[in-house]
Image (cartoon, rainbow, N blue to C red; front, side, top):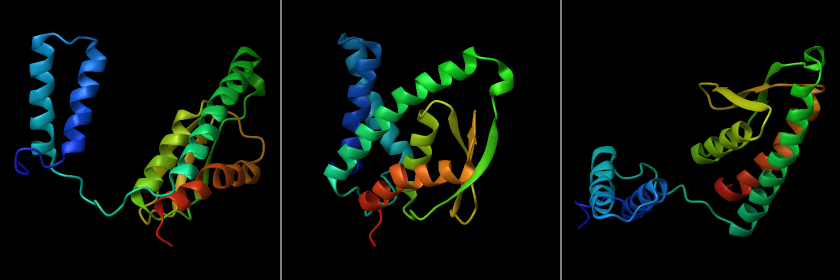
Length: 163
């Protein structure tokens, strides 16, 4: 069974996501979802680093609430900025020094930054110690970096890092 389904959770997720995205339980979609659920993990393989599992679910839930709040608040701020005069915008790139070392933690941080309106993760240094971020409007780089580290990176370190 392990040869057919090297990653059962990935297969189950693919199966469910396919059906949800297509909003159909027709026989054709069920068969296609099953084929994808078996074929994709076989082609891609099992997750490479099974030892990197998230810990501290309470911290993860708190982080999710913070991120959702920040997405809503940032949406309002971005709407005000783009509806106002263009001269008010101060777009900028800046580097965020990373303390989180886990690859998944870094990926989640980059995703959080990209999901938050007005910011975008643009690059990761080769040594994985700096994350390049673009902001639609940047007043104070030091304050923005401190906010990212306090609100997002610190909880991610608790969740992912084994220190």
